Image: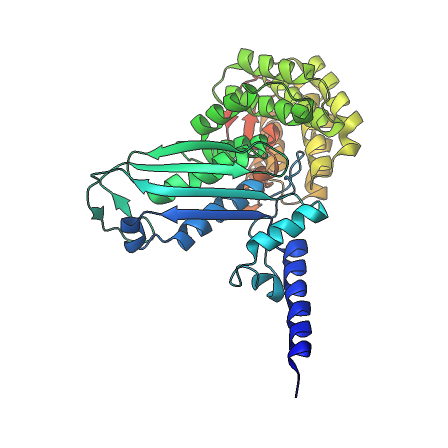
Length: 389
């Protein structure tokens, strides 16, 4: 028989093991969303709201980036003991232990409210319960050693899912505003009608904050996104202005400088300024060793080919495009530009073969950072920018 003291010791050890494991390896984003009873009864429960929030936050923070994701773990796969923490109501203890261990965490609380006198719930297929009235969502974000921030979001069409996604994006803006701007931008370039306007709004909110040297690199990369958006609109003067402001931002890390110079070089090619493009690309290569993005060396060579072609050296351009293809056979951009170059020389068969290879190959993942040379096409002889399909 195990006596009471032994049981107490075993329980205490197990308690410490669960809490300690959850603190070290569990998610560091804590979300609590209360849901109005009518919406909850229609199927959009508190648990569903929190899952939507976490999914949106994870989407924003995922992927490779020059600006690292903040130290907030989202939607991880916890160990068995870490998963026990929430059902045992140990979240507060876990957070306290994370504080003691110096582990940064983010606590978000909110509530989805229907305005007084709201209409009935409108049945919908799937997980999109809509009401006939406006929804409000007060939300508070709390980080250790920082003043809490709060806002109230409004969704006029009553879409609770959309409201929670917006809340997640707003909360992540308090942690890593650039990653939110990038996420909106890439969604817009992929066809989301609200993506580019949302990226512009989030960027301007960030740029409107008081200057903080700790945010220098994020500010520069946010201006980089505004430059890409201006290029997409054909507004080269605005794009040039944003690159200039980014370049003048003090305290920017070298890898960001490399990214800025690379995409600025693309703009110079589009503006038929080959000498300026070559200088910007040289600067980008100087700081490129500080980067750790997959395939970035091939991207530099691809850009080098465009610069060479823009300057009239088609032989060098062809060699660089072929080198990129040999190094990364999935690069449809190199196949495309080689096809254009061969067509300009009158090699119709070679051009057709390269265009077919471009169609069959898989493009670089433009979601890794939003590289201009992977988002847009340009003509090194005639200039200009066209968004890729």
